[in-house]
Length: 465
Image (cartoon, rainbow, N blue to C red):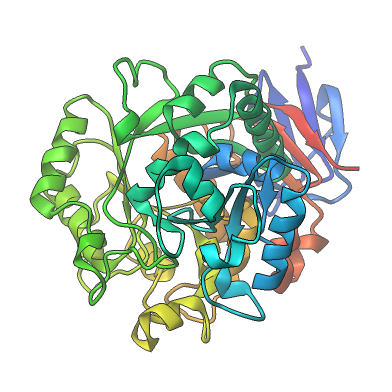
């Protein structure tokens, strides 16, 4: 009897299978990879030479923020401070308040100083403008009057931003629309799985909307609720050990000692309470002081859970020796945008950290699992892969294949899905990102590459003509 499969992908280049040109799919799983020798199927998808990559897994995203940037004001592309302020002023003319995201002074071509209230006080309506890393926000006088909190420069950092919560919180309708738009955006970028960092509102919104791909939720520790963890897509708990380099709130030597949010003893006690609930921990650690606290604690408790250290940017000698198989480095290669000569890292940290930050090459060469994500800064695997492949420093630079595997295979391990997601292999879920091969040939243009098709569990969920 001749077997007829659900779908046959043919005339394709297959990532990791140089001699294959076809994939057969049945009931959402890969059942054959090889040459097309007259395989029978209900549906045939002729890719005309396009390349099939594994579906991307974004191991650290903030999809609610991604969606709100689409529905509110995104300043990411403002070329200078003047243009950013002009965009805010123009938006204010049509809205009752301005909630803006992703301004980044390190990219500006005029004045590379932070926005302040002084820049925004000519706008009569309330303005809240979050820096790209979301570890600080600038608020004008009108907004400060609204919340009853005042700062001379209008700058709110880290925990201070809790005062802005009521002013910026979307209602259910806006939140649902934003999250749906973010999911559509993710799918259009070849993403088939996300480990999303969420608050309780976002968690509840997910329960009420259609979700087209796999979403695993990591809840902030201060929003952890009874019952979290019962759902198979509840991954674990997020905690902060420090802030960011861009906002100067990372736990870095010579900076404010208060940037380290928990001493090692306190963090260990906190981690044990999370592990006692049979939940893994995602710990935010950027500065070398925070990274050391995270690494030492997880090393002492190896095997408790499959945990992750988020960002892991400034890494001192010897730290990599502490990382075991149950500690995954969850990093954001798009951060390398700031890592070259003349970039923000050199400005903030000095030349000694130029080639030592984000040491992806050293991490992989040490046999450590490296899962890539975007931190929604911006969302988009190819944006990050571009910087990992093109870094000017050997300690950071990966091959294209390594970067793709960090954005797929390693993410599946982090999520506990390594036996059936993240690879193009027989028995695995048919999750693919399809690209024109020509768009991937020029490595210096990788961040502009977009898939022509995204396939999830054997179904086309995005198609670009």
